[in-house]
Amino acid sequence: MSILIRDEPTAAALATATEPQEVRGPDGSLLGQFIPTPKPAMSFSECGLTDEELEQRLNDPNATWHTPEEVMIRLREIDRGSR
Image (cartoon, rainbow, N blue to C red):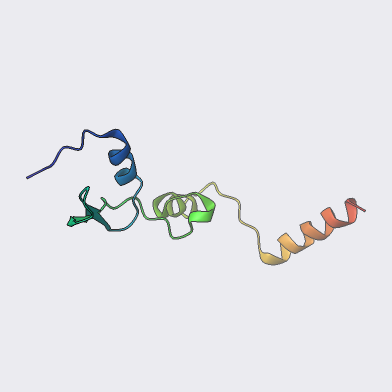
């Protein structure tokens, strides 16, 4: 059985939940637990891409890849140019 949440602030609070939350009544009594629907996995949330998007980029045949050495050379060039 589903329970329809008509109260927008409550629905918004539940929509932003990322882990199970206790649901309590007005008197503070425990009514149950809300378990949010799993969102797309983000192993590295700081980059803002889902795991699926990262996988697509890794397998992109048109992607340009650089070795760590190439990156360091470019960084040194940039550093010299900023002085």
